[in-house]
Image 1 (spheres, one colour):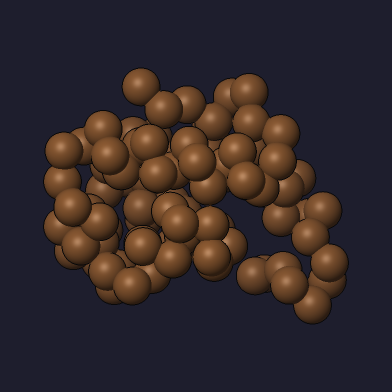
Image 2 (cartoon, rainbow, N blue to C red):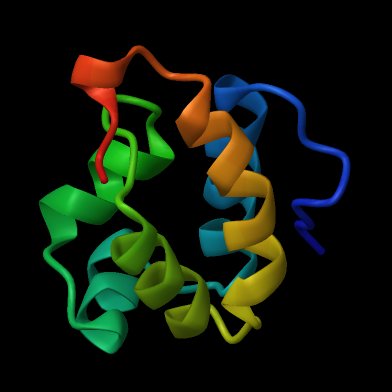
Length: 89
């Protein structure tokens, strides 16, 4: 099962989210609906095109049936490392 614990880069984080969604057996659109998100949002995140905001990340992870707290804990330093203009704070 996808886990955020060992993730060190934004690319690894996006890949782990892609695995997380894939492991649900549901389409990104179905996961998006379960999380109150848009399909384009989830696809952009799992394809590594868009960096999620904290709230969006929590909704996505919760929709996949996992506790978002470990994911957010890994997300924060990765988000902080992004150039200021790219941060989704």
